[in-house]
Amino acid sequence: MKLWNSWALILTFPLLAASNPVRFDIKDLTQRNLLAVVSDAPLEKMIAQCHLFHGWVEVDPQDLKAGIRGELELDTRSCETGSGIRDLVLQEKVLDVKQYPLAKVQIKKWVKEAIEVSVDYRGKTTSLEIPLKVVFFPEGEKTKGRLPGNLLRISSQSELGLPAIGISVPEEMKQTLSSKVELIFDAVGTSKLPNDKILLPEGPKPKERG
Image (cartoon, rainbow, N blue to C red; front, side, top):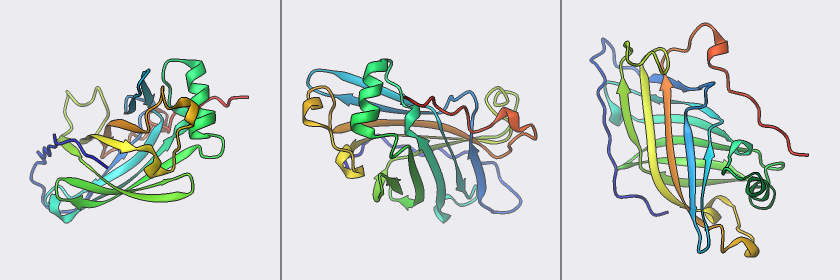
């Protein structure tokens, strides 16, 4: 998989009394977290936006080299392109969401200027390396408008060949859907979930198509 050359790691953790991994939960009812899939095919450019995912990331504030780990789960039925007809075609002919509604990603470790992840999707597990940008925000007045607690923003931009995760583009769709897509990921996790769980549930379930 070809990765974008632009990679950055920004870490501004304050000094802590003890060096321990901190867990940041990624859950947001307002669905401001984003996974965008950009396809640039010969006859059409398409952007699918997916907001219904949740998980967690854990890092050691005092020693980032000690490792990183985490898990994310994406509901593929939540991905939308802005066209109902196109969404239906993608979900039925490409993603087969009724049989494979969920995609799971497990963050394994740092690998040079990237992270190693395993993707569980369509009954197979695929290992990939992707760039990652990490920014820490200590809790304060400016962060409370997003989520309570200390916040960790993680983002990534890379290219992915769909066959690598078991997705085949039908012959009749190859002029409008590329087999290589750009992935743009951006999410914020919090170290402190509120006591009122209504604020941060996993989000509404997508509507089932008949």
